[in-house]
Length: 104
Image 1 (spheres, rainbow, N blue to C red):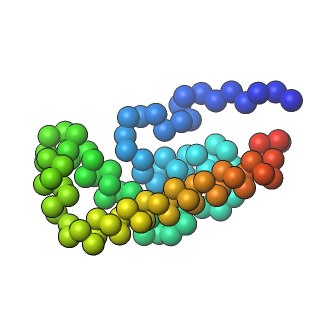
Image 2: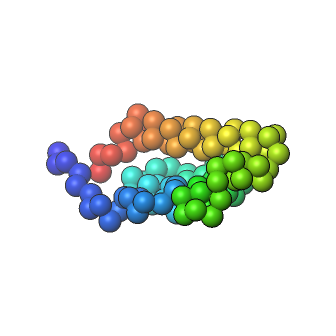
Protein backbone atom coordinates (compact mmCIF):
# COMPACT_ATOMS: atom_id res chain seq x y z
CA UNK A 1 0.00 0.00 0.00
CA UNK A 2 1.27 3.45 -0.89
CA UNK A 3 0.66 6.69 0.96
CA UNK A 4 -1.63 9.15 -0.73
CA UNK A 5 0.10 12.36 -1.76
CA UNK A 6 -2.12 15.34 -2.51
CA UNK A 7 -1.06 18.56 -4.11
CA UNK A 8 -2.02 21.66 -2.14
CA UNK A 9 -4.00 22.71 -5.20
CA UNK A 10 -6.63 20.14 -4.16
CA UNK A 11 -7.04 21.52 -0.66
CA UNK A 12 -9.15 24.55 0.31
CA UNK A 13 -6.15 26.59 1.45
CA UNK A 14 -7.06 29.76 -0.39
CA UNK A 15 -7.43 31.84 2.77
CA UNK A 16 -11.18 32.07 2.38
CA UNK A 17 -13.93 31.21 4.78
CA UNK A 18 -15.41 27.79 4.09
CA UNK A 19 -18.11 27.73 1.47
CA UNK A 20 -19.93 24.90 -0.29
CA UNK A 21 -17.29 24.71 -3.04
CA UNK A 22 -14.66 23.88 -0.40
CA UNK A 23 -16.76 21.03 0.97
CA UNK A 24 -17.51 19.85 -2.59
CA UNK A 25 -13.76 19.63 -3.13
CA UNK A 26 -13.28 17.58 0.04
CA UNK A 27 -16.06 15.21 -1.11
CA UNK A 28 -14.41 14.86 -4.52
CA UNK A 29 -10.86 14.35 -3.23
CA UNK A 30 -11.81 11.74 -0.64
CA UNK A 31 -14.75 10.23 -2.47
CA UNK A 32 -17.14 10.66 0.44
CA UNK A 33 -20.59 9.19 -0.13
CA UNK A 34 -23.58 11.49 -0.57
CA UNK A 35 -23.59 15.24 -0.93
CA UNK A 36 -21.31 17.77 0.74
CA UNK A 37 -24.24 19.45 2.48
CA UNK A 38 -27.10 17.61 4.15
CA UNK A 39 -29.61 20.37 3.42
CA UNK A 40 -29.76 23.02 0.69
CA UNK A 41 -30.26 25.73 3.33
CA UNK A 42 -26.79 24.99 4.69
CA UNK A 43 -25.26 26.69 1.65
CA UNK A 44 -27.06 29.90 2.65
CA UNK A 45 -25.73 29.53 6.19
CA UNK A 46 -22.15 29.10 4.98
CA UNK A 47 -22.45 32.01 2.57
CA UNK A 48 -23.93 34.25 5.26
CA UNK A 49 -21.11 33.41 7.69
CA UNK A 50 -18.43 33.85 5.00
CA UNK A 51 -19.84 37.18 3.83
CA UNK A 52 -20.08 38.47 7.40
CA UNK A 53 -16.53 37.36 8.19
CA UNK A 54 -15.21 38.98 5.02
CA UNK A 55 -17.07 42.19 5.76
CA UNK A 56 -15.35 42.41 9.14
CA UNK A 57 -11.95 41.25 7.87
CA UNK A 58 -11.87 43.85 5.12
CA UNK A 59 -13.02 46.74 7.31
CA UNK A 60 -16.54 46.99 5.92
CA UNK A 61 -18.13 46.58 9.34
CA UNK A 62 -17.30 45.88 12.95
CA UNK A 63 -18.20 42.55 14.55
CA UNK A 64 -20.90 44.35 16.55
CA UNK A 65 -22.40 45.83 13.39
CA UNK A 66 -22.47 42.45 11.68
CA UNK A 67 -23.98 40.75 14.72
CA UNK A 68 -26.57 43.51 15.02
CA UNK A 69 -27.89 42.97 11.51
CA UNK A 70 -29.87 39.94 12.63
CA UNK A 71 -32.05 39.34 15.68
CA UNK A 72 -30.48 37.05 18.31
CA UNK A 73 -32.83 34.20 17.37
CA UNK A 74 -31.50 34.25 13.81
CA UNK A 75 -27.88 34.26 14.96
CA UNK A 76 -28.61 31.28 17.22
CA UNK A 77 -30.29 29.49 14.30
CA UNK A 78 -27.12 30.03 12.24
CA UNK A 79 -25.07 28.53 15.08
CA UNK A 80 -27.36 25.48 15.09
CA UNK A 81 -27.04 25.18 11.30
CA UNK A 82 -23.24 25.33 11.48
CA UNK A 83 -23.33 22.57 14.07
CA UNK A 84 -25.41 20.42 11.68
CA UNK A 85 -22.89 21.08 8.89
CA UNK A 86 -20.01 20.01 11.14
CA UNK A 87 -21.86 16.86 12.19
CA UNK A 88 -22.56 16.01 8.54
CA UNK A 89 -18.86 16.34 7.65
CA UNK A 90 -17.91 14.29 10.70
CA UNK A 91 -20.37 11.51 9.79
CA UNK A 92 -19.13 11.40 6.20
CA UNK A 93 -15.51 11.17 7.34
CA UNK A 94 -16.33 8.51 9.92
CA UNK A 95 -18.23 6.45 7.35
CA UNK A 96 -15.31 6.79 4.93
CA UNK A 97 -12.83 5.57 7.53
CA UNK A 98 -14.95 2.76 8.97
CA UNK A 99 -15.69 1.43 5.48
CA UNK A 100 -12.00 1.73 4.56
CA UNK A 101 -12.91 3.64 1.41
CA UNK A 102 -9.38 5.03 1.36
CA UNK A 103 -8.30 1.65 0.01
CA UNK A 104 -8.66 1.66 -3.72
